[in-house]
Amino acid sequence: NPLFGCFNDLTICLLAFFADCYLYGLIAETVGKGFYTHMCLACIPVINCLVMGQTRGDVRDAKGIQGDALTDCILVTLCQNCTLAQEAQESKSDITSCVIQRE
Image (cartoon, one colour):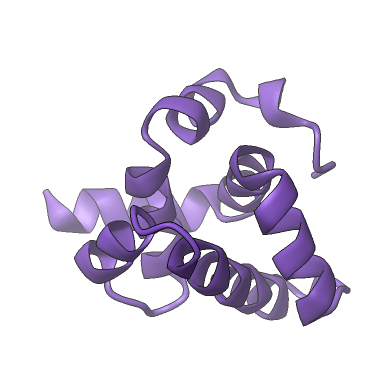
């Protein structure tokens, strides 16, 4: 999915821009990290860029997407909501499974 393909899925787009910490927690959970811990970490300035960059790398590794840690950190810092939407679109089926299991 392209970085600025935020509008490809309206639900993910709205979550990325209005409930970004929640969406990040879901994405983190798909790569084996704690939902609540990472949702809270996403609310702390500076730390959020570090953990989101690391999780973006984990999503890339899990999905076989090329990239590097430096680019991940730069993108998360400059386009946080767009990167969340992109990661969520890549992990959409995994996110759905996590939400269903939690309910």
